[in-house]
Amino acid sequence: MKELIIAEFKDVDSEFPSNISTDMALSNCIKAKSSALAKGDFNAAGQAAKAAAECYRRIGFSDKAINEQQTAFALFKETGNRSGALWTKWANGNLLKQECEYTIAIPVFRTTYIHALSIKDYHCAAYSYAGLAETTRIQGFYQPSFAQHLYALKTFRSLKDYRGIVWAYGGLAQMYKNCGKLRNAFELFDISRTIAEESSNMLGLGYALRGVGEVQGFGNSILKGMHHLNIALSIFRLKRLPQGEAYVQKSLGDINLRREYIELSIQSYQNALGLFRQINDQRGIAFTLKGMGDVQRRLGLFDEAIDLYRNCYTFFKAKGIEYGVQISSIALASLGVIDRKSWEKPDSSTISFFNNY
Image (cartoon, rainbow, N blue to C red; front, side):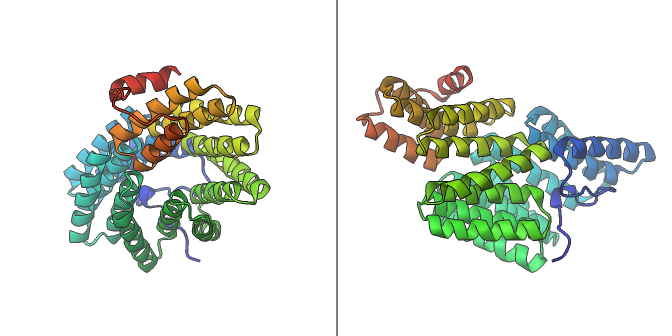
């Protein structure tokens, strides 16, 4: 299998090995940018700034990511590098998606895709379409998202871009998992895992193993699932990627709760909350607090559970995260709470609750 294409680090002088930690990659980017600026090579400096922005995004420093993106865009504008500018817009779409600004992210991905096609940068076009597919999936628009994921997958295959292929299979698998089709989800996550392994894509492997482990944990292979989740946890810790580690901790909390290991479940959820708050991932916080609500319900603390479910529902509703709305609604209905008009809160008060819980 051909060498993995790491699109967001494309054209940086020293391309990073796929197993390098995020903070080491960031250090290399900053050095590369300084060196390029000193030489007057604005194009190389723009590539390094763009890569630094991606590193900052992954570790949760949104303000620094935005600054680096603005720097990259200005440098690419100076050099007339339209492709570099479009990759920077794609990265900005990812940042908007991470901050739950889905209605803004969708047109960013769509216009980047169109403009990338116009200059025949097919890799950028494919990644922009994959970003669009992921954003529409998060919002619960499964029919267009499924078609978008398939189109992105077809394009990545034609480009032999294995990182993109891993991402597309993972997105399709996540959709099947959310719909309760665990066998289909497992098959696609396992394909994603195999390709990530063969292409030495450590980041993709971590997310694929998280998917495989989660599906196994929800099915009849709990111990295998826990094993795969712990491998994923090790990968994300090695990469020093708090978001990946947080989502694995959240999955461990879910599965430990299913096993009736209440104390382990609470510990995993608390670990996840700490990491999500570290990077200000409000979506991750909401899903984790929904899990904490399940713990409270299991312990018979129904008022506490209802309060958590209500705040999660309000956040998911405000951000248009349909899957979150559904699971929060089901949880509330299971405790006899049906009428929402009397307790729905404005989004700002929900965010305050999340940060202070």
